[in-house]
Image (cartoon, rainbow, N blue to C red):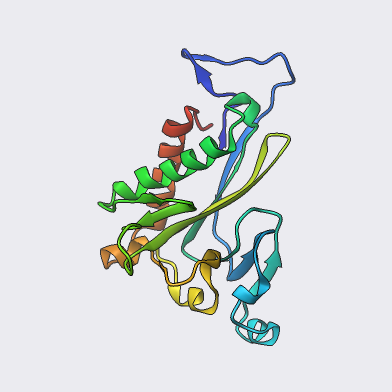
Length: 208
C-alpha cells in the first residue's frame, strides 16, 4: 500500500507550489538480522562475527538513528517514506506520531503503550523500575525532509534473539511482544491492517 500523494486539509488535497511528491508506507518482515544505528556501538552485539554466522544471523551497519536492534520473523517493520514538507518540518513531532500509531494499535489488544522520557519507541510500564519493557523500537533518518527507516513492532517475535545484544544500547530493561503480553499468538496480518488504519488516522492520509 502507499499513501496518497498529499495529506488532506479541509477535505481537499493540500497542494504545494513545489513539485508534488508521493508518499509511501511499507510494512515488511525480515529474516534474522541485527542492525546498528550510526550512534551505536558494535560492542552492544554480544556475539562474535563467527557466532553470528554459525547462527545464521546477519549484521548490518545503517545510517539511521539509534543503536543496535534485532529484526526477525513475526515482527512488523514499518518504513514510512514521507516528504515532511507536505506534513510538517518537525522531526520530534514525526517521531511522536510514529509512536502514537503503535500506541493506538496495541491499545486495540488491551495493551497500554507509553513513552519513556528521553527514549524513543513504545514502552510498557516505563516508570516502574525493573518492569520497563520495550515493545516497539524506532530509529529514523531524514534527509531534505524525506524520511527513511522507521519502526519495529514485536508481534509474535522470538525474543531470545535480544539476549545476544544490548537492545538500543539500554541496559537493565526488557524487550516484549504482543504475544508475550497477552500470553497467546496474535494474527500477524490483522496487526498490520490495524497499523495501516491508525497510520491513516494519525497522519491524516488515505491509503491507495
